[in-house]
Length: 252
Length: 368
Ligand SMILES: [Zn+2]
Image (cartoon, rainbow over all chains, first blue to last red; front, side):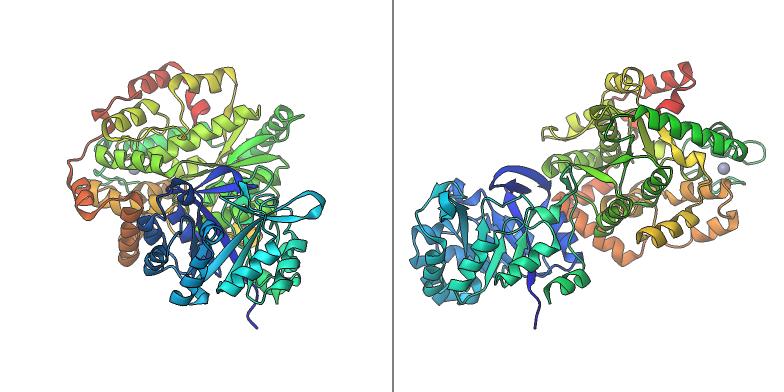
């Protein structure tokens, strides 16, 4: 069996990469082209590229930037940010991106997921779900880059997205983002138990053992941001990725 | 073309002069500098012990004893190794200018993990730095690496000052870096130069670019009493042996060529300098090894016959550099064809540095 995929998440703000904590306080970590060149040589399984400003500006995806980045990537890439229509998705897939990640548009207009899956196939459509833990351990889906409560329960919402045709769920814990304290394993098991499509655990990875924990909780893949760009107590920017041997030992 | 009878420097250095025996000024300078700065073997043990005690004393009660720069290259990695071996507690500082190779970051990671050293990284905003690098390309001087070098020194001083540390331990060394013609590379301490070139050719605002004016340099040196320590001058630094240690002990990987751990450096030294300025830095580098007895003169001359870098990799680097700098072929051709200039065509602090050197004989020790 193929081992669990391990996916660096890159956050794009304008032309540069940033890393957030709790979806806030973006810290500049460098130029995407250089980061990708390094990840290419590290032979990462896949990349998730999320433009955290594209939704807010309302201008939609920055196609030229996406194309420029996609052309440098040796690995499969999923892109998210500012996607609002089937036309957007067609253009993005046309740049060489394998998969799109839909978030705000899926909350606003769930039918887009159905249309997109019908048009491009479920394997090309991922839905990302950003989750915050509320009082008494209740989970809630947040929209608009983690800033707005939606009232949705992540388990029910994930099931709806699966029924609409999403091929994959990118499940992000807003509370754990950038903390490197481990995934929200409870959240991961709840969602993976409820859906049949692959779930990518995201938010909180700090060490390889965290990947193992997410896999045990049912994740088909694990994503990490801070772990692959920050090093040591000063959170010094240094791009890393575990060796294939390390990953096989932890995830096979 | 005249060539020195002792080293392999030649008249591609416009300022070179030969004595009656055909020995060049670089050789003479090497002899002086080596005498002044390489610690004689008999005194090394004691001087080094004194230095280590002084650094430890200065770091007492602080989180670190000293600052070291790390690039993933052999000199800086070896410094990390030596400093740990001496029982010091260094803070490693890295400047990310957007051109690190995978080998460089992997080397840094392995070194720091194995030796247990903390890291601080400063990432220069790429849009800003791109603007500055292009400015230097347009300035048409061979000093296109000055934006990086200046930022590294500025960063080292800043971090030392921030942590209250008095020692910056560097990998600069007489054995491999005593020869460097001024017209082949000038200005890494000269903010006036960087500023003037950027004022003329740049447009972005330099807001995350680390730099220091002459006044700030004096502040660091004389008020904060921050010292640059060329630790490799205190030990028997043999590059081949050093690399062996690093490979065996740290899993460090060689990247071929001096300072080729940065893709821009590789592009600049292997493509731009030879093609545009007729400068081949290997001449200085090999001459250094010849003078320090690590390479025979014939061996050096033979080695010069090999290409600087394999042609197809050179072209790969060139295309990558153009893409990253967002220069099209026409703009790059214009840069390559522009008449050569030197730092003398710009506003610099060169005169002041020369004066300072004459006035304060010891300034060399202070500013490396
Ligand atoms: Zn000579």
